[in-house]
Length: 389
Image (cartoon, rainbow, N blue to C red; front, top):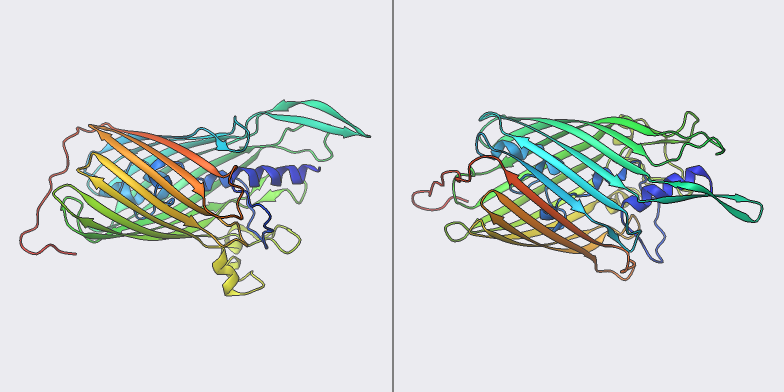
């Protein structure tokens, strides 16, 4: 097996998607796909919905502009952990730590650190008809990002994010046919969030959001040609509707769509050599079967959440994609428990299609967040007269 195909194996493995008996048609292949793994258990329980959900400690990944709609002075941390991807090696894991601080009524700062480990990998070389062990190493990737968010009016705000990515998934040994190296890249995000009503009013409301993510340089694993991989640039759009039931209860529904802004491979799995900006535009017109094939690349997320007295939440959702492009077809479940300034979340994802190997695509996510600000809640204003939608 050549070094190039070893790289591709790592990329596909890190998505935790296995399709059994299904040949993908011109799939989108990128470097560092760990950047699109949803880290937190709250979104993980709602079909990976997050760009338009109510603000929380994990908004740094989904949409940092949501921090603008927390109460002034709010700050906290969120820790998320995926202990293993069931069916793969037991030592594969993913971790994310995030921090946010609403520094004024109109501004917020935030950041996060993400680490993904492929576990211990044995290095082997084929010499004649013998396989000789050359040692082992632990491939890993991490990303560090910072965001600044600004509220443009009472209902809408935007955020910009800068990110550094390091991808150490090759063992740079001198006995390889191509000298490989650690891949590094930088990227930027632009996101926005809208709410139809202020969050200090217990009323029905609409929310909407977007996130243009990972626009940046390519990961370069060798000085030779053919080892450059685009980042998983993507655009996610979403909306939500929140129904205020009793005094402190909510029922929320979400629908979101994500499309990778990276040209797909050709019929021979050759990776396009477009620039980052050129790839964004070409990603809408590169499919040989036209717009219908472009739509097959879209990943849809549907989610729902019941919030009982801001103490207990129950969630479920669905994430789905056409079988020709990856066939993400999973149902998700989750629960959350709030104790003063602590929030504990748990989520479970399971495939629901015969095309997917059931023993390999089950994921457990665990998250915990803590608010540094006082537990006193934002003053709730009950509207006079008819509740506004």
